[in-house]
Image (cartoon, rainbow, N blue to C red):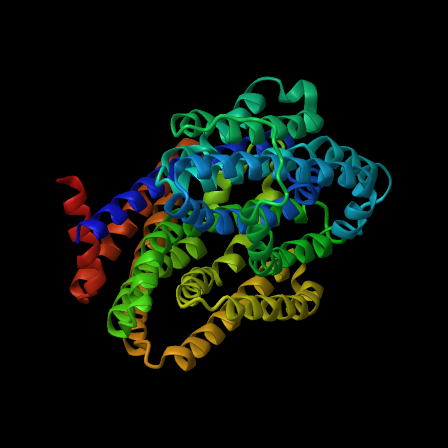
Length: 515
C-alpha cells in the first residue's frame, strides 16, 4: 500500500511540474504566435526544428528507456562505483555520436529540408537550411540530457528531469519578451539551442550529488555499452515509427496554404497537453504495478490495475474531447490571436485542433495499452501496431487533404489512432484472455452522457453570455475560465450521480495526498 502511495505521490509531483512546464510552453507558443504569426517564417522555423530534433528525440527516448534498467542492473550487481564509471563512459560515447550526427547533419541539411518540406523553394528553402544548421547543436545537448535523465531516474531522483522543461521554456520566453524583434526568426533558433543546453545543465548538480565526476575516458569494449547498443535497436525502431506521421504531415502541409504547418503545430501542442500532463502521469504509476502483477502471473490483479488505469483515462479524456470541440475557437482566439497571429490563423488552428481532438481518447488509450504490452515483455506488437498506424495515416492523408486541406491531415491522424487502438485491444484480448471490456464500455457510456450534458451547459453559458458582453479579450478570457469551471463542476456532479466508481477512487487519492 505504501508503495502505491509513493508511486501516486511521484506521479502527482510529475504531473504538477509538467503542468507548470506545459503552461510555460503554452505561453512560449502564444508569444511565438504573437511575434511571428502563422505563416512564412514560422512554417520555416518549425520545419527546421523538426529536421533538427526529430531523429534525436527518437534516439533519445529509446536510449533513456534502455539505460534506466542497465543502470539499475549495474548498481545491483557491481555497486555504485561501477555505475558511476559506466555513466561517465556512456556519456562520452553519446557525446561523440551526437557530434558525428551534427557534422553529418550540416552537410545533409539541404536533402533533409527537401524531404520534410517539398513545397519550400527559393528564399524559404534557403532559410530552412540556415535555421536547421544553426539548430544542430541541439542534438548534442538532447543526447546529454537523456543520459543524465536515465542516470538520475535509475537512482529514483525524479525532480531534476521533471523540471528540465521549466528553464527550457523560460529561455524562450525571455528572448520573446526582450530582443525577438531585433534578431527575428534566426535569433529564435539560437535561443532554441540555449534552451536545449539549459535542460541538460539543470541536471548536473543532482548528478554530482550522487557522486558523478566527469573524465574523458571512452571504452567501447565495455560489455554494458555493447548491451545498451544491442537493446536500443528494437526500442529505437518502435519509437521511430511514431515520428514518421509527423514527417508525413509536415511534408504534405508544406504544399498547402501558407500557415498550414504552423496551424498543425499549434493545434497538436494544445491537444498534447492532456496526454503529456495527465495521461503520462497515470501510465507512469500503472506501468510498474502492471509489470509486477504479470511477473507474478497474477492476471486478476493485472486486469484490476489495467481496468483502473483505462477508466481513469476515459474519465479525463472523454470530457476533454467534448470541451475542446466546443471551446477550440474561443480558446485559440483568446490565447493566440494577437500581433501577427490574425483571425485567419485562429480559424485554421482551431479547425485542426477540433479534428485532432477526435483522436484524443484513442491516442491516450493507445499509450496505456502499449505499457500493458511492455509489461508482459511484448515489444513487437506495439511496434507492428505503429507501422500499421503509419500506413493508415498515409492513406487517409492523401484522401482527406484534397477535400479538407490541413484539417484533413489532423483528421487522418485521429482516424489512424482510433483504428490502431481498437487493434491493440483485440491483440491484447488474444494475448491474455478476458480484459474487462464490459467495464470500459460502461465507464465510456457514463462519462459520455456526463460529457454531453456538460457540453450543452458550457455551450449555452459561453455562447449565451458571450453575445451579451463587449468584444474585449479580458472579458472573453474570464468567460472562458468561467465556462471551464462550470463544466468541470457539472461533469463531476454527473459522474457522482451516475456512480462512476473511478471518480471516487480519484477523490480518495486526492484526500490522502492532502493529509
